[in-house]
Length: 100
Image (tube, rainbow, N blue to C red; front, side, top):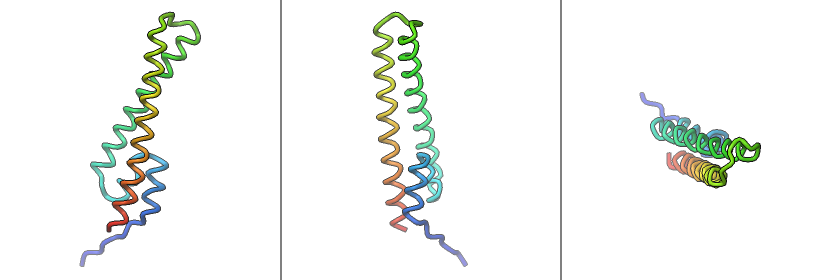
């Protein structure tokens, strides 16, 4: 006898809100959840590198203005990627759990 567990869409959405990809793991979408977690880690790394470049420029460790612009671009790119991944993760986890 096979028992199917019904996932609650609200729980899946909240888990994805807390940590990108966690709702997919809750829904049993292991590969998708791990990819979202990996992409979130890369986005966070991009954001941190951008913030470090901005900090170095502010404290005078880097004197070139192009490093400041690179830091701004990287930090904005990292934030945008994290937001897009977060919204996608929440909506995908909710919709997948609703379909079961």
